[in-house]
Image 1 (tube, one colour):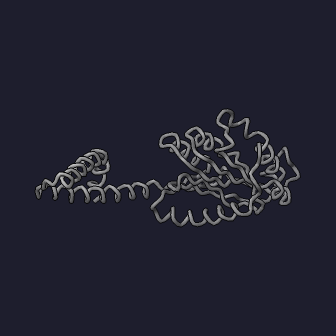
Image 2: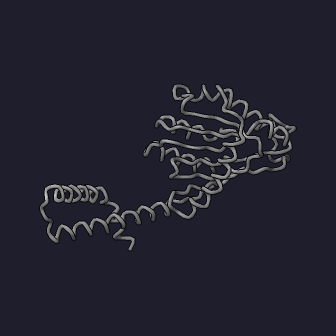
Image 3: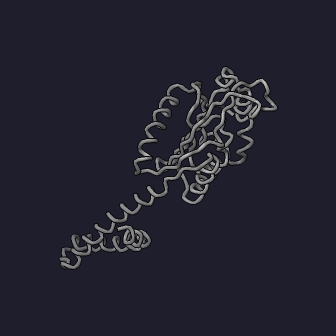
Length: 245
């Protein structure tokens, strides 16, 4: 089953052109009232079957492309490559400080996408005991416009802060591909103490934590997107108003 599907998928653009020609002939046949032969009817039926197989093949390809990465940064690099190759129109990002996802944001803006970025409010890590994260969040808000340079467009990037403690990171692009990761909270000891913030009692990690990339029309995408969408809806309703840079 897989071999013929791969062959059809490799030649799908040729089949689409052929289908277009057949559709034109069917249209003119109806318009000018000249009958098509049985062979043409068989051709139409054949093209319908081919398009069904192409759809099945595309679904299988996406299923095979669902991938787990040992670190979030590796997954984000893959997303960046996908955006630059295929473009993007809309993206929603749920992040802690957005330090790790700037290359993805640049790629999105470079391709003309609209970006909604939700980040953790600095009051939350301050209350938890992570001044390191407070510093990262406040620095990002001060510097993001400069980091984006000529790509910055206030009409295409919206940044809002949420107050509930963040546990999930995510990037969804065009409701086609979703990257999901996590934030871990670890007690600070001699092995992970920050030299810049030695009084921190909590270390929050995300860039070096595992992440998943899943594609639409797969069970994994549908399941994880439900979770992502719940958070998105909550932040859309309860997060602070958009930051003005």
